[in-house]
Image 1 (cartoon, rainbow, N blue to C red):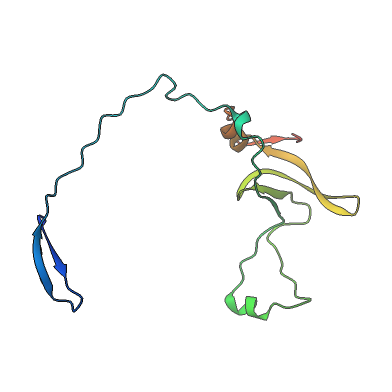
Image 2 (cartoon, one colour; image 1 turned 120 degrees about the vertical axis):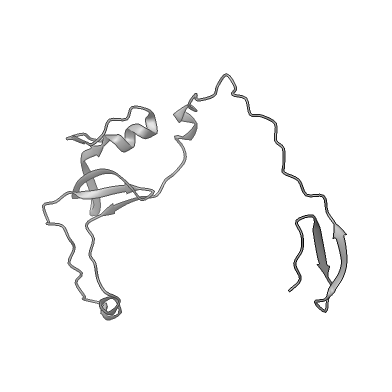
Length: 139
């Protein structure tokens, strides 16, 4: 296999053999120094993003099952989850847990009544970060 120096590029012909040696000028890229603008560090107003839709989901629990068990799953199979029926469910937005709540029924549809808000996650979004869950908070 032919070797090339950093300053030369060896072009290959269609049959794989070297065609010609061409000298190429190689040097590090130079970029102008970045300067901060008066708005550097200022946060964008959150209201610019209020109409963006996000994926929200509710997680009842989790289970560790083997591939063999997955292959045996079928209609009527039961997968036991790691939570008690009285435990709150997790409310996830874009895969991040933002709250917990209890499953309720509203007009023949499932819904979740929020019982705890993970204020640290919500706070990071709106600039008022407080760690942990806020008990009894509603949304």
